[in-house]
Image 1: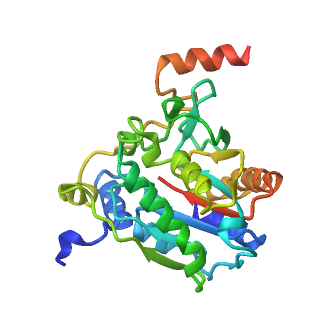
Image 2: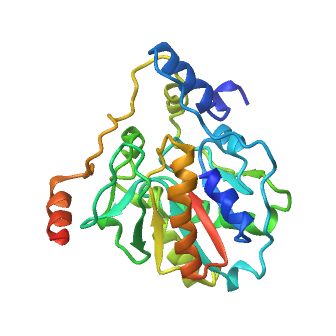
Length: 165
Length: 122
């Protein structure tokens, strides 16, 4: 395996790219402590799964996200046809495929198939969606995360799958 | 994403992050993570490839059972179609800023969406 096969180091590349343009560095979250760890209480085949996508996905007919620290969420019915899924995200350049086939980024159909074959007990009725490009970590903590927590609690999910862009 | 995962896990909700930027996952250290080595924007598989999408999501969910160590990142066996040129462009340290202007109005994918949403609000 040579270096061309190695995972891309996005943080280093993007930091250097912005620096060369004279822009302030983007501050990715750096964890300073080990994460909490909650064991599954029952097998996935008997669990209710919730989905969070931070891709800026919305359903045609919903209000799209804006690009300046939009901390709002959308609820995407889990049975939504891929043809009705849209995207608005500050890094639009990564959405080229998803705008043609949303399922490569928001796996509603794959999750439905896994539920139908019994690998997942059940799915929350709606996926939670947000626009992941929020620059203020304070606003993520104070505005965005409480909404996500509230919906997952309301949905009584046992586990959550989080799919970033 | 990592912030949300860590918070939810702290409340007792087991989480799993499925992403395609290994260093960002490692930096944020969510409780459980699965890395799929595809260009950003394809966390759930190759476009128009249902078999690959099923394989990626199925393999990711398996990590709920297999990860025992907090912060572990499982690397999926996966390879993007032939062309590896995407790595060089993604890793470029020079080039234009590809972010969109930080506009505060809704950024609809198309004008039909705008009309639908505005009609629904009235």
